[in-house]
Length: 446
Image: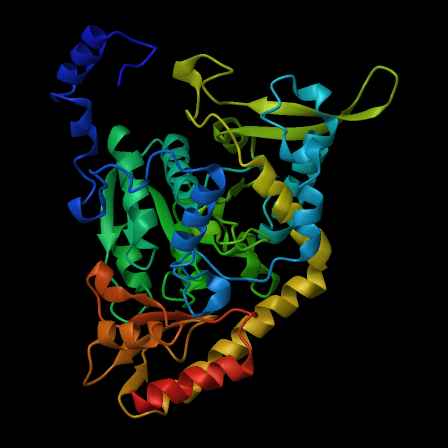
């Protein structure tokens, strides 16, 4: 297939420059078992009605999350999405809006982003928030790069209690900036503060923690914070779960310099894996403000004294000299950020806290019951919020997962996928006591 943008000769030249022979070589990483090399099995000459029926029958082979009892987490969470969100974001003013290049003409969009920024600041306790990022992983990577620029140091301490996908993205971003990553290995679901204390030296620029961490546990935040703050140049990055910040202390209380995370849980459905919503906040500090990627919406007054909204800061490469840009991120997730804004407005402080409390109590109820069953053990039962590690004895965890899937129960994330033992189980406010008891009964007879 020829492309309009370049000739075959130009295309071949580009391929050779990156060491490839054909366009197909760009897709070699796709496993053969999922690659559709053959033509689609559709008869020629069928009507649109027949084609739609065929597609619908094929689609019925899949099961949505609403047809199963899900205990999956590991970074993407099945929380309740209030009906008001779809009703409001479906308005054409929001649904069809694109990046506001003529920003001040898009007052409604700018106001929505401004409110989003204000709420993220309230949640995290930080002074400045940008207009959102693509997802939690890229936000974390941008935060590390930003921290290294501010500290002018290249060493980054990266505990293994951080989401493994985030760690990979952080390292990918850091490779171009020639950052040095020090992996810190945990032994009991949290990192030992003495490891951080041992590794911090004159070349350390950034320390990253997840709150709660990938396993659902809370790190020794105050102790680690004291260690980090002894060196004023070290930038402290916290990856937080925003929906749990209605229940937990804000990261600002632990001396965080930059707070990032995945805000999919704030009114955004799972949507088969995306789009997601990354948030990014930092201290109210001029040096940090100038290094914050993306854009910031501010409020001002015109010459007649009328209040309005403007794009206050844009440090992305499309708007300033490329060598001065903080990032090449070219957009923000405005529609998803709007969903988070509506969610937070609808829930309020009381509602958000109740969601966190329900997650906590329901997960602890389930963990306690499972831990009493023979053949099962909860590894971090003394320290978790709404996710915990389930260890399976005398059975293979993948066999347990498969048997439960056949009964429309998704038990959790198999930690063998990242080279560890156990299953990461998550409980949100959507799970009922009947569903929790059903899982306990099924595990007991497996």
